[in-house]
Image 1 (cartoon, one colour):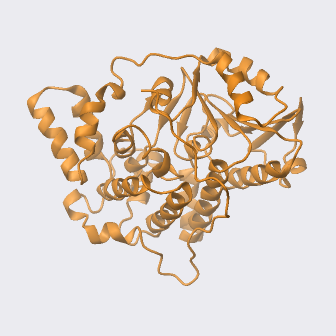
Image 2: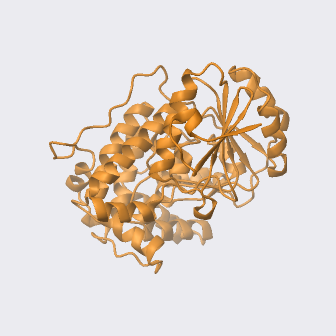
Length: 386
Protein backbone atom coordinates (compact mmCIF):
# COMPACT_ATOMS: atom_id res chain seq x y z
CA UNK A 1 0.00 0.00 0.00
CA UNK A 2 1.26 3.44 -0.88
CA UNK A 3 -0.10 6.49 0.93
CA UNK A 4 0.13 9.33 -1.55
CA UNK A 5 0.39 13.05 -0.92
CA UNK A 6 -2.54 14.44 -2.81
CA UNK A 7 -0.28 16.66 -4.89
CA UNK A 8 1.12 13.63 -6.65
CA UNK A 9 -2.29 12.42 -7.78
CA UNK A 10 -4.45 15.48 -8.16
CA UNK A 11 -2.24 18.54 -8.30
CA UNK A 12 -3.17 19.94 -4.89
CA UNK A 13 -2.02 19.30 -1.36
CA UNK A 14 -4.82 18.99 1.19
CA UNK A 15 -4.30 17.32 4.56
CA UNK A 16 -8.10 17.04 4.90
CA UNK A 17 -8.23 14.35 2.21
CA UNK A 18 -5.91 11.33 2.32
CA UNK A 19 -5.35 9.13 -0.72
CA UNK A 20 -4.12 5.53 -0.57
CA UNK A 21 -3.03 3.62 -3.68
CA UNK A 22 -3.36 -0.18 -3.82
CA UNK A 23 -2.81 -1.56 -7.31
CA UNK A 24 -5.73 -0.31 -9.42
CA UNK A 25 -7.72 0.94 -6.41
CA UNK A 26 -7.62 4.41 -4.87
CA UNK A 27 -9.03 4.96 -1.39
CA UNK A 28 -10.16 8.53 -0.63
CA UNK A 29 -10.28 9.17 3.12
CA UNK A 30 -12.16 12.22 4.41
CA UNK A 31 -9.78 13.40 7.13
CA UNK A 32 -11.42 15.85 9.54
CA UNK A 33 -12.41 13.41 12.31
CA UNK A 34 -12.71 16.16 14.95
CA UNK A 35 -15.35 17.86 12.78
CA UNK A 36 -17.04 14.55 11.85
CA UNK A 37 -15.41 14.97 8.42
CA UNK A 38 -17.50 18.05 7.58
CA UNK A 39 -16.76 19.10 4.00
CA UNK A 40 -14.65 22.23 3.67
CA UNK A 41 -14.07 24.13 0.44
CA UNK A 42 -10.53 22.69 0.29
CA UNK A 43 -11.85 19.11 0.60
CA UNK A 44 -14.40 19.61 -2.16
CA UNK A 45 -11.79 21.04 -4.53
CA UNK A 46 -9.40 18.18 -3.70
CA UNK A 47 -12.11 15.58 -4.34
CA UNK A 48 -12.98 17.27 -7.63
CA UNK A 49 -9.38 17.04 -8.78
CA UNK A 50 -9.14 13.39 -7.72
CA UNK A 51 -12.31 12.30 -9.52
CA UNK A 52 -11.39 14.25 -12.65
CA UNK A 53 -7.83 12.87 -12.73
CA UNK A 54 -8.71 9.24 -11.97
CA UNK A 55 -11.43 9.05 -14.61
CA UNK A 56 -8.78 9.59 -17.31
CA UNK A 57 -6.15 7.37 -15.63
CA UNK A 58 -6.05 3.80 -17.00
CA UNK A 59 -4.09 2.80 -13.90
CA UNK A 60 -7.15 3.45 -11.72
CA UNK A 61 -10.12 1.05 -11.96
CA UNK A 62 -11.97 1.57 -8.66
CA UNK A 63 -12.51 4.34 -6.10
CA UNK A 64 -13.24 3.59 -2.44
CA UNK A 65 -14.45 6.43 -0.22
CA UNK A 66 -14.61 6.44 3.57
CA UNK A 67 -14.33 8.76 6.54
CA UNK A 68 -11.67 8.76 9.23
CA UNK A 69 -12.97 8.20 12.77
CA UNK A 70 -16.56 7.57 13.81
CA UNK A 71 -18.33 9.40 10.99
CA UNK A 72 -18.38 9.09 7.22
CA UNK A 73 -19.32 12.77 6.77
CA UNK A 74 -21.78 14.97 8.67
CA UNK A 75 -22.27 17.33 5.70
CA UNK A 76 -20.88 20.68 4.67
CA UNK A 77 -19.01 22.75 7.26
CA UNK A 78 -21.92 25.11 7.90
CA UNK A 79 -20.33 27.02 10.81
CA UNK A 80 -17.22 27.87 8.78
CA UNK A 81 -19.40 28.71 5.76
CA UNK A 82 -21.51 31.16 7.76
CA UNK A 83 -18.31 32.91 8.90
CA UNK A 84 -17.00 33.08 5.32
CA UNK A 85 -20.30 34.52 4.07
CA UNK A 86 -20.18 37.19 6.78
CA UNK A 87 -16.56 38.01 5.84
CA UNK A 88 -16.71 37.73 2.05
CA UNK A 89 -20.38 37.97 1.05
CA UNK A 90 -22.91 35.56 -0.42
CA UNK A 91 -20.87 34.94 -3.57
CA UNK A 92 -18.38 32.94 -1.49
CA UNK A 93 -21.23 30.53 -0.81
CA UNK A 94 -22.27 30.53 -4.47
CA UNK A 95 -18.74 29.39 -5.38
CA UNK A 96 -18.82 26.75 -2.63
CA UNK A 97 -22.14 25.36 -3.86
CA UNK A 98 -20.99 25.46 -7.49
CA UNK A 99 -17.96 23.27 -6.72
CA UNK A 100 -19.92 20.97 -4.43
CA UNK A 101 -22.73 20.37 -6.91
CA UNK A 102 -20.26 19.86 -9.76
CA UNK A 103 -18.55 17.19 -7.63
CA UNK A 104 -21.89 15.51 -6.90
CA UNK A 105 -22.71 15.55 -10.63
CA UNK A 106 -19.40 13.99 -11.63
CA UNK A 107 -19.88 11.26 -8.99
CA UNK A 108 -23.45 10.61 -10.21
CA UNK A 109 -22.29 10.20 -13.82
CA UNK A 110 -18.89 8.59 -13.13
CA UNK A 111 -17.72 5.91 -15.54
CA UNK A 112 -15.73 3.93 -12.95
CA UNK A 113 -17.23 2.23 -9.89
CA UNK A 114 -17.14 4.07 -6.57
CA UNK A 115 -17.71 2.13 -3.34
CA UNK A 116 -18.67 4.33 -0.38
CA UNK A 117 -18.25 2.74 3.06
CA UNK A 118 -20.97 4.43 5.08
CA UNK A 119 -20.09 3.83 8.69
CA UNK A 120 -21.32 6.32 11.30
CA UNK A 121 -22.97 9.62 10.36
CA UNK A 122 -23.95 10.26 6.72
CA UNK A 123 -25.76 13.58 6.44
CA UNK A 124 -26.23 16.48 4.02
CA UNK A 125 -23.16 16.94 1.84
CA UNK A 126 -21.87 13.54 3.01
CA UNK A 127 -24.82 11.97 1.21
CA UNK A 128 -23.97 13.99 -1.90
CA UNK A 129 -20.45 12.55 -2.23
CA UNK A 130 -21.60 8.96 -1.58
CA UNK A 131 -25.21 8.21 -2.51
CA UNK A 132 -24.71 9.30 -6.12
CA UNK A 133 -21.96 6.68 -6.50
CA UNK A 134 -22.40 3.16 -7.88
CA UNK A 135 -22.15 1.23 -4.60
CA UNK A 136 -23.30 2.49 -1.18
CA UNK A 137 -22.45 0.12 1.68
CA UNK A 138 -24.38 0.78 4.89
CA UNK A 139 -23.63 -0.91 8.22
CA UNK A 140 -25.17 -1.55 11.62
CA UNK A 141 -23.59 1.76 12.75
CA UNK A 142 -24.84 3.98 9.92
CA UNK A 143 -27.04 7.00 10.69
CA UNK A 144 -28.40 8.86 7.66
CA UNK A 145 -30.42 12.09 7.58
CA UNK A 146 -31.03 15.20 5.52
CA UNK A 147 -31.71 17.60 8.44
CA UNK A 148 -31.68 20.85 6.45
CA UNK A 149 -35.23 22.09 7.12
CA UNK A 150 -34.36 22.36 10.84
CA UNK A 151 -31.46 24.65 9.83
CA UNK A 152 -33.46 26.96 7.56
CA UNK A 153 -32.03 25.32 4.42
CA UNK A 154 -33.39 22.53 2.18
CA UNK A 155 -32.15 19.06 1.14
CA UNK A 156 -29.69 19.79 -1.67
CA UNK A 157 -26.54 18.07 -3.11
CA UNK A 158 -28.85 16.25 -5.53
CA UNK A 159 -31.09 14.95 -2.74
CA UNK A 160 -34.14 16.00 -4.73
CA UNK A 161 -33.03 13.37 -7.26
CA UNK A 162 -32.38 10.44 -4.92
CA UNK A 163 -35.09 11.17 -2.32
CA UNK A 164 -37.79 11.67 -4.95
CA UNK A 165 -37.08 8.16 -6.24
CA UNK A 166 -37.74 6.39 -2.93
CA UNK A 167 -40.89 4.24 -2.54
CA UNK A 168 -44.19 6.15 -2.53
CA UNK A 169 -43.87 9.48 -0.71
CA UNK A 170 -41.11 8.33 1.64
CA UNK A 171 -38.75 10.89 0.12
CA UNK A 172 -41.05 13.76 1.07
CA UNK A 173 -41.18 12.39 4.62
CA UNK A 174 -37.38 12.05 4.91
CA UNK A 175 -36.80 15.51 3.39
CA UNK A 176 -39.35 17.52 5.38
CA UNK A 177 -38.98 15.81 8.76
CA UNK A 178 -35.21 15.30 8.60
CA UNK A 179 -35.88 11.70 9.66
CA UNK A 180 -32.91 9.57 10.73
CA UNK A 181 -32.54 6.22 9.00
CA UNK A 182 -30.34 3.32 10.05
CA UNK A 183 -28.39 1.06 7.72
CA UNK A 184 -31.18 -1.49 7.35
CA UNK A 185 -33.65 1.25 6.39
CA UNK A 186 -31.18 2.70 3.88
CA UNK A 187 -30.88 -0.71 2.21
CA UNK A 188 -34.62 -1.42 2.16
CA UNK A 189 -35.61 1.95 0.67
CA UNK A 190 -32.80 1.91 -1.90
CA UNK A 191 -30.43 4.59 -0.60
CA UNK A 192 -27.83 1.86 0.08
CA UNK A 193 -27.00 -0.94 -2.34
CA UNK A 194 -25.56 -3.25 0.35
CA UNK A 195 -25.55 -3.79 4.11
CA UNK A 196 -22.92 -5.51 6.21
CA UNK A 197 -21.78 -5.69 9.81
CA UNK A 198 -19.23 -2.99 10.58
CA UNK A 199 -16.75 -5.60 11.84
CA UNK A 200 -16.57 -6.94 8.26
CA UNK A 201 -15.74 -3.57 6.69
CA UNK A 202 -11.97 -4.07 6.82
CA UNK A 203 -12.25 -7.49 5.18
CA UNK A 204 -14.37 -5.99 2.40
CA UNK A 205 -11.93 -3.13 1.95
CA UNK A 206 -8.96 -5.47 1.64
CA UNK A 207 -10.81 -7.53 -0.99
CA UNK A 208 -11.75 -4.41 -2.96
CA UNK A 209 -8.14 -3.23 -3.04
CA UNK A 210 -7.25 -6.32 -5.09
CA UNK A 211 -9.68 -5.41 -7.87
CA UNK A 212 -8.10 -5.10 -11.33
CA UNK A 213 -11.22 -4.20 -13.32
CA UNK A 214 -13.85 -1.47 -13.58
CA UNK A 215 -16.57 -4.00 -14.40
CA UNK A 216 -19.58 -3.34 -12.19
CA UNK A 217 -20.51 -7.01 -11.90
CA UNK A 218 -17.06 -8.01 -10.66
CA UNK A 219 -17.13 -5.34 -7.94
CA UNK A 220 -20.70 -6.27 -7.01
CA UNK A 221 -19.71 -9.93 -6.56
CA UNK A 222 -17.00 -8.98 -4.08
CA UNK A 223 -19.36 -6.85 -1.99
CA UNK A 224 -22.07 -9.54 -2.19
CA UNK A 225 -19.73 -11.99 -0.45
CA UNK A 226 -19.86 -9.87 2.72
CA UNK A 227 -23.39 -8.48 2.45
CA UNK A 228 -26.37 -9.39 4.64
CA UNK A 229 -30.12 -8.84 4.48
CA UNK A 230 -30.97 -7.15 7.80
CA UNK A 231 -34.42 -7.01 9.36
CA UNK A 232 -36.17 -3.71 9.97
CA UNK A 233 -36.70 -2.71 13.58
CA UNK A 234 -40.30 -2.83 14.73
CA UNK A 235 -40.46 0.96 15.08
CA UNK A 236 -38.96 1.63 11.62
CA UNK A 237 -40.63 4.41 9.67
CA UNK A 238 -40.71 2.04 6.69
CA UNK A 239 -43.32 0.06 8.61
CA UNK A 240 -45.41 3.28 8.44
CA UNK A 241 -45.38 3.63 4.67
CA UNK A 242 -49.16 3.45 4.45
CA UNK A 243 -49.56 6.46 6.76
CA UNK A 244 -46.63 8.27 5.11
CA UNK A 245 -48.08 7.80 1.64
CA UNK A 246 -51.52 8.95 2.76
CA UNK A 247 -50.26 12.10 4.51
CA UNK A 248 -47.14 13.13 2.59
CA UNK A 249 -48.84 12.79 -0.79
CA UNK A 250 -50.88 15.90 0.01
CA UNK A 251 -50.34 18.95 -2.19
CA UNK A 252 -49.14 21.41 0.45
CA UNK A 253 -47.21 21.33 3.73
CA UNK A 254 -50.31 22.63 5.52
CA UNK A 255 -52.36 19.72 4.16
CA UNK A 256 -49.65 17.23 5.17
CA UNK A 257 -49.67 18.48 8.76
CA UNK A 258 -53.49 18.56 8.79
CA UNK A 259 -53.63 14.92 7.63
CA UNK A 260 -51.18 13.90 10.35
CA UNK A 261 -53.14 15.82 13.00
CA UNK A 262 -56.34 14.16 11.89
CA UNK A 263 -54.63 10.80 12.28
CA UNK A 264 -53.40 11.79 15.76
CA UNK A 265 -56.89 12.87 16.85
CA UNK A 266 -58.27 9.44 15.97
CA UNK A 267 -55.47 7.39 17.51
CA UNK A 268 -52.74 8.08 20.08
CA UNK A 269 -49.54 7.42 18.17
CA UNK A 270 -46.08 8.50 19.36
CA UNK A 271 -44.58 8.32 15.87
CA UNK A 272 -47.26 10.59 14.38
CA UNK A 273 -46.91 13.04 17.29
CA UNK A 274 -43.12 13.16 16.87
CA UNK A 275 -43.49 13.69 13.11
CA UNK A 276 -45.87 16.62 13.64
CA UNK A 277 -43.51 18.12 16.22
CA UNK A 278 -40.53 17.89 13.82
CA UNK A 279 -42.49 19.63 11.07
CA UNK A 280 -43.65 22.42 13.39
CA UNK A 281 -40.07 23.03 14.64
CA UNK A 282 -38.67 23.38 11.11
CA UNK A 283 -38.43 26.60 9.11
CA UNK A 284 -41.78 27.25 7.37
CA UNK A 285 -39.97 28.66 4.33
CA UNK A 286 -37.63 25.65 4.16
CA UNK A 287 -40.55 23.22 4.35
CA UNK A 288 -42.35 24.88 1.46
CA UNK A 289 -39.39 25.18 -0.89
CA UNK A 290 -38.23 21.65 0.01
CA UNK A 291 -41.60 20.10 -0.82
CA UNK A 292 -41.81 21.81 -4.19
CA UNK A 293 -38.19 20.90 -4.93
CA UNK A 294 -38.71 17.19 -4.20
CA UNK A 295 -41.85 17.14 -6.32
CA UNK A 296 -40.01 18.70 -9.27
CA UNK A 297 -37.14 16.26 -8.81
CA UNK A 298 -39.37 13.26 -9.56
CA UNK A 299 -39.30 13.92 -13.29
CA UNK A 300 -35.85 15.50 -13.66
CA UNK A 301 -32.35 14.21 -14.39
CA UNK A 302 -29.60 14.61 -11.79
CA UNK A 303 -28.23 17.58 -13.77
CA UNK A 304 -31.60 19.32 -13.82
CA UNK A 305 -32.02 18.74 -10.07
CA UNK A 306 -28.61 20.21 -9.27
CA UNK A 307 -29.20 23.27 -11.49
CA UNK A 308 -32.48 23.96 -9.70
CA UNK A 309 -30.91 23.39 -6.27
CA UNK A 310 -28.10 25.81 -7.17
CA UNK A 311 -30.59 28.59 -7.85
CA UNK A 312 -32.37 27.82 -4.59
CA UNK A 313 -29.15 27.67 -2.54
CA UNK A 314 -28.01 31.04 -3.91
CA UNK A 315 -31.35 32.60 -2.94
CA UNK A 316 -31.05 31.06 0.55
CA UNK A 317 -27.62 32.60 1.23
CA UNK A 318 -28.61 35.97 -0.29
CA UNK A 319 -31.43 36.09 2.26
CA UNK A 320 -33.66 38.28 0.09
CA UNK A 321 -36.94 36.78 1.31
CA UNK A 322 -35.89 34.97 4.47
CA UNK A 323 -32.69 34.77 6.52
CA UNK A 324 -33.77 31.51 8.14
CA UNK A 325 -30.53 29.76 7.12
CA UNK A 326 -28.49 32.17 9.22
CA UNK A 327 -30.94 32.04 12.12
CA UNK A 328 -31.20 28.24 12.06
CA UNK A 329 -27.42 27.84 11.93
CA UNK A 330 -27.07 30.26 14.84
CA UNK A 331 -29.66 28.47 16.99
CA UNK A 332 -28.68 24.87 16.22
CA UNK A 333 -24.93 24.98 15.49
CA UNK A 334 -23.39 28.21 16.85
CA UNK A 335 -25.20 29.44 19.97
CA UNK A 336 -26.93 26.06 20.36
CA UNK A 337 -29.94 27.49 22.20
CA UNK A 338 -32.17 25.30 19.94
CA UNK A 339 -34.67 28.17 19.65
CA UNK A 340 -34.61 29.55 16.12
CA UNK A 341 -36.84 32.56 15.47
CA UNK A 342 -38.08 31.85 11.96
CA UNK A 343 -39.19 34.71 9.76
CA UNK A 344 -41.88 34.42 8.55
CA UNK A 345 -42.83 32.33 11.61
CA UNK A 346 -45.92 30.58 10.20
CA UNK A 347 -46.58 28.48 7.11
CA UNK A 348 -49.54 30.57 5.98
CA UNK A 349 -47.25 33.63 5.84
CA UNK A 350 -44.98 31.96 3.27
CA UNK A 351 -46.92 32.82 0.12
CA UNK A 352 -46.64 31.07 -3.24
CA UNK A 353 -45.02 34.16 -4.78
CA UNK A 354 -42.21 33.97 -2.20
CA UNK A 355 -41.68 30.25 -2.85
CA UNK A 356 -41.56 30.98 -6.59
CA UNK A 357 -38.65 33.39 -6.04
CA UNK A 358 -36.37 30.56 -4.91
CA UNK A 359 -36.72 28.82 -8.29
CA UNK A 360 -35.92 31.90 -10.37
CA UNK A 361 -32.61 33.18 -11.71
CA UNK A 362 -30.60 35.47 -9.44
CA UNK A 363 -30.98 39.14 -10.35
CA UNK A 364 -27.27 39.89 -10.56
CA UNK A 365 -25.34 40.51 -13.83
CA UNK A 366 -22.30 38.59 -12.51
CA UNK A 367 -24.32 35.51 -11.51
CA UNK A 368 -24.69 32.49 -13.81
CA UNK A 369 -26.75 29.31 -13.65
CA UNK A 370 -24.87 26.14 -12.72
CA UNK A 371 -22.95 25.07 -15.81
CA UNK A 372 -22.45 21.29 -15.89
CA UNK A 373 -20.38 19.39 -18.47
CA UNK A 374 -22.12 17.05 -20.93
CA UNK A 375 -21.83 13.45 -19.72
CA UNK A 376 -23.42 10.17 -20.78
CA UNK A 377 -25.41 9.31 -17.65
CA UNK A 378 -28.47 10.97 -16.11
CA UNK A 379 -27.93 9.59 -12.60
CA UNK A 380 -28.04 6.30 -10.67
CA UNK A 381 -31.03 4.03 -10.32
CA UNK A 382 -32.46 3.89 -6.79
CA UNK A 383 -33.73 0.34 -6.23
CA UNK A 384 -36.01 -0.33 -3.27
CA UNK A 385 -35.76 -3.72 -1.57
CA UNK A 386 -39.25 -3.45 -0.07
